[in-house]
Image (cartoon, rainbow, N blue to C red; front, side):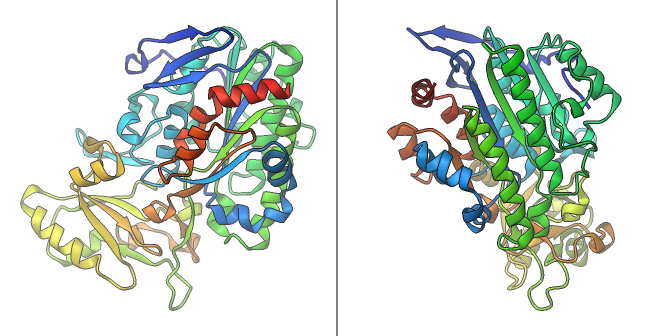
Length: 470
């Protein structure tokens, strides 16, 4: 667990920091966008509900009075549907949300990628892989500010906290719920709180043990820790302007369809945490990193609807082909490393034969997909071309990609729900304050993106409405 840990800031994250002051409002600038600094004592919270396609909120609507009545109706808040970044995976989209730009700019092209210089598949969790700073690394340089970053999945933490100062001095804290109970976390939490907190148990009376990352409770646990941290800051540093980011896990969405009992129960509990934040006066924005689709073979309903790319290329006599599955991460019980997006590398002499074979495979009635050359995919999906294969595969609504049958343990995912393709792009976008007419028009035009979240949360109009409520 890394809470306020030391890190030498990468030179790639260093750039000119600009803070300007208007009559009553401060601004900071990062990655070509201007952000408004909240008023003194104001807390601004961005939440990523992992795997939350809009249908989950619709199915639980009558069990979420805080969201639909308090945050939207009574607060004149905003709800629209926007697009996430491609591929529709956790790492690229979380980093898009916290940088405010697409993967073409921040460089995180998947959960995994092929390092062309070494030929090795690499998990994209190292901060040096980022090609631009995060919003938090700039915000924290404004006086009287605190950054709070919480995630369920530990794999995200080092990138989410990239560029933050090595000396925390109560200025920021980062925590993953997955490892909240290790010794490093406890000592770092004590340091952040000047000894007032010795462990996560001091933040919440409800949790004596850390829930499994393979559970609905892990996300609720993380949100409760977040509320506890914000309460602690309000009590000990009431004048601080706080920018927080909470990222859940998608275990529930991988295992259950929107109208099943389990997700409705989960969103009912989630709503209680949203209500707690709203009742404390926080400006809250909610979106998702991606949606979720049923990827089970329709005829029997007993196994994933998968096409094995490396096996198929070998059957066509194409030697040396490699299929990289960017959905791959440590949480294979979620998806078995089967997702609706893949990149393929082949020897130069096999490019045309491979293209033809893949395009023929993609015409399947049961596992359709679209084949793009690297340059076309980079332009169409706004991706970093140098971190793509020769070909990019975008799956159909029910299609997923695998390497070979032996590579995947399908016993973990007999009925697969997964993501990665353009079919999982649509996600909710919610703000518990009025947004400006310009922002509303953008979000509802079809051009709104999940990585607009902090640009809207830290917008002048939302800032003004927050002052009127205080």
